Length: 222
Image 1 (cartoon, rainbow, N blue to C red):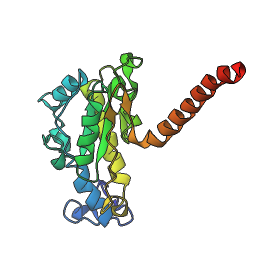
Image 2 (cartoon, rainbow, N blue to C red):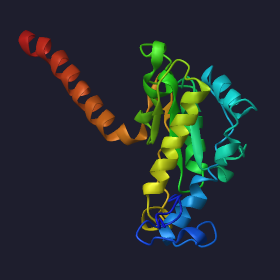
Image 3 (spheres, rainbow, N blue to C red):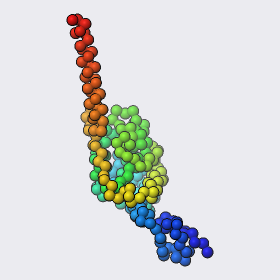
């Protein structure tokens, strides 16, 4: 009689369960049961930015149906969501709102960059109004290539996110202090508050160079 568990998704492999008790008795660890509950109840935030959002909507519909993964509860409020699927082109005008929504999401939270635009700017990378990848401002957990990715690709990316959740421990995620990301400021261009010191230093050096260049003709005339 084989004592190897048929399904080790929740069972701990160090403790074999007799075949006649499999499906009745489960021996597991606290990390496994905690992550098992989280991986099957990831709630994406309900918003889309561009054409990738159409593929995301298709993935939630009957043909592909990611309700199988417990992800069909797409929340309109960031405070009830823990997965942000950045589906589409991130423009500089939209960027502050995306970062603000991320800051309001529940911990632990995850970011999926769906498509070429969210991952690196896509065909609009050199555009004056497009951010060349949301990972410049948010920590991305899963990248999904494509323009746009198919529903199958999105499902595969979400399965990879589930695998990442499986590898985490309660110590890593429970009670972790939320990291508030400074909201970019939209002016003539997007300014990252984390770069303010470098901007000030560059501005000071530029002003000193201009002042020195203006003083040279006056010194020559004297």
